[in-house]
Length: 563
Ligand SMILES: *[C@@H]1O[C@H](CO)[C@@H](O)[C@H](O)[C@H]1NC(C)=O
Ligand SMILES: *[C@@H]1O[C@H](CO)[C@@H](O)[C@H](O)[C@H]1NC(C)=O
Ligand SMILES: *[C@@H]1O[C@H](CO)[C@@H](O)[C@H](O)[C@H]1NC(C)=O
Ligand SMILES: *[C@@H]1O[C@H](CO)[C@@H](O)[C@H](O)[C@H]1NC(C)=O
Ligand SMILES: *[C@@H]1O[C@H](CO)[C@@H](O)[C@H](O)[C@H]1NC(C)=O
Ligand SMILES: *[C@@H]1O[C@H](CO)[C@@H](O)[C@H](O)[C@H]1NC(C)=O
Image (tube, rainbow, N blue to C red; front, side, top):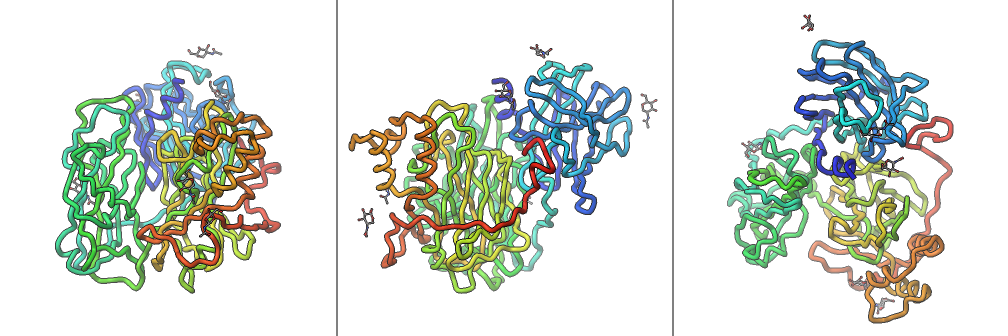
């Protein structure tokens, strides 16, 4: 329980270039890391004024943020030696038979060392693309018991294998920086608060169409722990008015419901989004509803009172239109309870499709994806997208095997990914519900689940959303087959009425893998494509095959802790 709390309360924001500043028992430590692709290593640097006051310092790797069954490099202050070690399931620390941490330099306040991405030692973690959950710890005693109170540890998130991107603010003539920020918001002493800022765009932007070229969540210095994520929406319709306050405030204008078209979404620790030079996201101009809304999710587990925040989005727009309009598309599983997850499952997976029926509506040259971002809540641990052409899986993109809702990285696609008409995109999410004795329903709440990927792409299409779930009709037949026949029950109640033993879980898995799909292929205004030859609520499950290739590390030959 304590460890779980630690994970949720002491999450440390890190930055894109690989650094984290943490306070361990009042000792400030700055950790930076840098990937070396040629050598296939990472260089890790610890800087702490109080370096010599601790007995040891540790840099660890953990699959999903647990301290037990984790890997580390440990620096012993007295001997100035570095050890490659392991924490077992009983929280006992030991040294590995094979040593893979290489000390490079030591000063009175710092040490620097190197670690290979992949060591092929089954007690070492193999550093992967996507999120890597890192442990930063120190100890005031010579202990090998990771539960000892002498040890202070925090989880940080890092991306070790992603080419560093230069995402500096563009400097173009006539560009305008729009700030949509909270105005000294008094953050309530509640764990979760959503704060809304509805603001009119500057007059110049409304006069003519502009392009968004850069977008960044500008977090008030010192509040990095408090701002969990932020979204900025366009208010598509309605007579809007300016507002700033709690999103649940009854005084918030009702028409703000129309503020739902995503312009940007940025999570803790994230860098800016820089549009490619030939692309911009349209904003402003005649007939454009003049209002945007920023929604800030404050995460305040210790329920501290009196915190003041002025975070928000800074958005650079240019009147010099670029050749292509960008769009943001949501793929994955439809929000809702049709695809839900049985309790006590170590790895239950589901996939949402963007089927050929919908991608047939893409422009002739297809779309080019330049950023993608995965989104799930507390139960999904692994998320990735796949692309199929002619039914054959040709690649995966944005695989994250160590996903955390606290670190929803926006991955720059280099090179850009071209998706053609008739291709199928799939978003797969794997849930661990061993700690839940209830069905985890699909839905909006933090305890419900979502399996979503946002794609930033060009040229803009009519399609805002391309998601699927199992068809309702098939699902109701499945429940009837399981003896849940009461027609007055809704889907959630039916899920809860089933006894989720192994056989029923297996049957649900089969249903999700093969049943017809309810496909949302929605336009920007939420309308469907009428006159389509097939029925959107009953699209045939895509027939997909797999090529005889494997781009992943061969788990059996080159073992790792995360195998
Ligand atoms: C880590 O410890 C927790 C609680 O102490 C336990 O539930 C969990 O199974 C352990 N994890 C592993 C991988 O042993
Ligand atoms: C490091 O600390 C030792 C002992 O406190 C001291 O003698 C030495 O001068 C220090 N070295 C540097 C470079 O500060
Ligand atoms: C490790 O430390 C914890 C907390 O002090 C204690 O409960 C546990 O018994 C210790 N384990 C061992 C093997 O000493
Ligand atoms: C971030 O916000 C502060 C005020 O909240 C502002 O002074 C600063 O210029 C902003 N930074 C950028 C890069 O826009
Ligand atoms: C589509 O299929 C659903 C379920 O089979 C059915 O209820 C609905 O009437 C169909 N719609 C059309 C337009 O055929
Ligand atoms: C399927 O059921 C959900 C309720 O879980 C409902 O919101 C949705 O409209 C239904 N979809 C169709 C196409 O019938």
